[in-house]
Amino acid sequence: YVFGDYCSGLVWHVPSDFDDPRHAALPDGVDTGLVISSFGEDANGELYVTSLTGGLYRIVED
Image (cartoon, rainbow, N blue to C red):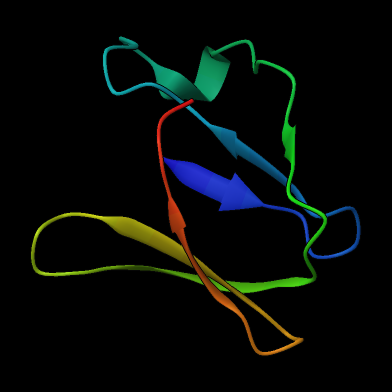
C-alpha cells in the first residue's frame, strides 16, 4: 500500500508481507518535494505519482 501527504509531499508504503498492515509501524516518509495529487499504475505494474505542478514521476526503489 502506497500513500502520500498532499501538504508535506511525503510518501510512505506498507510492505505487502505484513500480516496485519493496520498495525504496521511506518518507516520515515520519503520527502518528494511535490504537491502530490494522485498515484497510478501502468500495465507493467510500475507506480507513478502526479503533482499539481503538472509533473508525472515514476516511483523507483532506492
